[in-house]
Image (tube, rainbow, N blue to C red; front, side):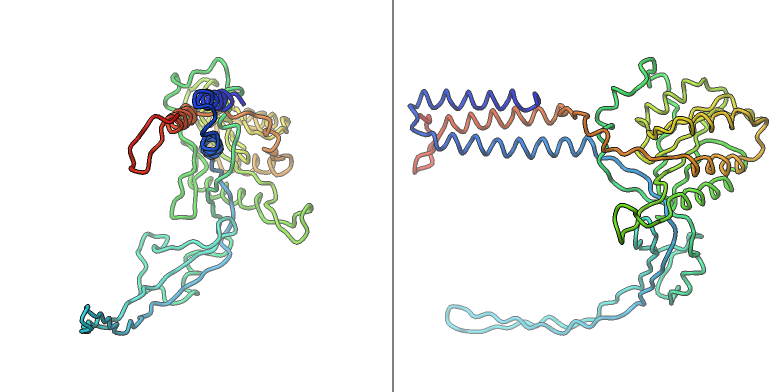
Length: 371
């Protein structure tokens, strides 16, 4: 509330002072200025809060449909334009007709992101008018049920207020080699959600993709008849922060990623070249703490990991059994302070409002003191 109350009070007092000086001769103009600035305040605050709380989360789905539109040629007929001068003489010009070529277009539909335009085959070859020539040919390269992923915007108040959740004894300046959040989309359809080195990483990523898709399959929404919703609404991520890293790296990763997104279940750990896991630190906004403990106990009980794929399977089954996503509306109590830029604009509007009230223009456009 204090973000806007003080500058608004200053504006109101300033306008009242102007009215006392001018003996109330321009009170209507002062009201117009006051309400105009109030509108600007509202727009500024709403925009600033939206920018601070805007975040992206990863959804998982699968390929469900394909569409191929063949190339075609469109004829644009000649267009004649005529004009007349002041004497009534008419002159005409004609733009010749021409053919416009429309290239073939190909689309893949996913359950998490709808229709997606594609112009390259999975092996990198560029598609053109010569190939593919029908929808059935697309199906050869993008199999039905293939796991997909996409990013989506949502409002995250925690992001703007994370300082109250962060670890007090962690300074991110001491952990500059931490990885970035995995939300880079490859080939418009895929996101790798195993970060760092693990044995048999390629197959492990495929396995995790399948699990994320399974756990986010669409099911009937019990609270909304005739509507569907994602089942577990979870995004599982594994992060090996590196060899012989202290457990503080897990806490630091949580702070760098600001606790993760609302649907994330992140398993951070440190594993040596010989497959020995030094520590495990799962984090998530989910309040099912027993799940985090069981994942930690399971992974810490492993010796000399040779293949990460069984770990992906086991942890995913644990998530399937016990994960419950936290409703982010529970964080609506958090207050989002205006940013420095947002506060600057509040005061800027106040100054402009008072300056405009202090001057007026006569019929000739000259600026005069506005009493």
